[in-house]
Length: 336
Ligand SMILES: NC(=O)c1ccc[n+]([C@@H]2O[C@H](COP(=O)([O-])OP(=O)(O)OC[C@H]3O[C@@H](n4cnc5c(N)ncnc54)[C@H](OP(=O)(O)O)[C@@H]3O)[C@@H](O)[C@H]2O)c1
Image (cartoon, rainbow, N blue to C red; front, side, top):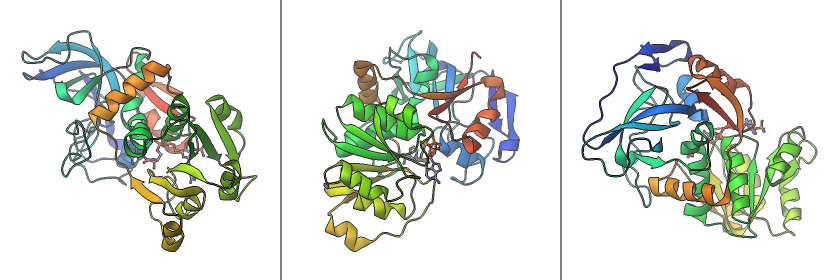
């Protein structure tokens, strides 16, 4: 079977198409023929040597979806022909995160999804949403699970709540779509007006920060001076202080990403005055993923895909995400 693998050392120029042995499923494993995989910032950072310190050879990517083609003799959760998605954090089944539960992750240090066949423990997969095709289903494990974890598992947003997020990447657009499905209102901070119409079409209000640089004042104005209930910060850096200023007293700032800056200097008196809670997040459990699947089906949510790259050209997907600022997800089609 074919796979892409970082050979010798982890670097994009060492990502090679290789022929590997067909895996045999163990007693409680399912053999999954992958139909699509999807990119996240994490994959780009790993390929650039800026995330983790993983050993080569390594099959990259954490996200993907496929069909069960064989089951081990003790498997009870799935059968042949089922459409499944391997979980990004295979040992986190349910409940709050615990010490050690996140040590094994797909795409580093564990082998990832960029291979034609994967043997997956039956506890480390969920059924794919019935309303999604392969390309859409492949986008869920990191970005959508993280969005659901923040919105519903950690914070518990509800109808009428206002949620702010920046940009048009994978996490941000899932925040928009899932918040809307819950009857909440998303406001997206954009770096320019170019994508405003598409974001509005996805169901969010827009603040164009190139025209309204004092965006925290704009968020306060949009909420009658109260502030947003939840600010999902995917950019990082000292902008977190402006997020605090735009969040209501007793609200939450979720520290999710760092596409802008990996460190922040927090104005503690300002944060304490507003009694703002800070949450960090690192993916989600299988139970969170299963709740997401039900939510996607019930509300017929369809992930937003920017680019589809055929399997044999998978390295182009890394380049696209690293340099292209896509609107939504970059997906790899194993049938393309
Ligand atoms: N903690 C977790 O569990 C978790 C899970 C998933 C992702 N993350 C992190 O969350 C962040 C977003 O992930 P993603 O998968 O959504 O990435 P993505 O799909 O690449 O989207 C990132 C978006 O951020 C915007 N952006 C990029 N650089 C920016 C800058 N300097 N200032 C402001 N906006 C900028 C761009 O949108 P525009 O072009 O529209 O501005 C870009 O599309 C990353 O740092 C990722 O590592 C964390």
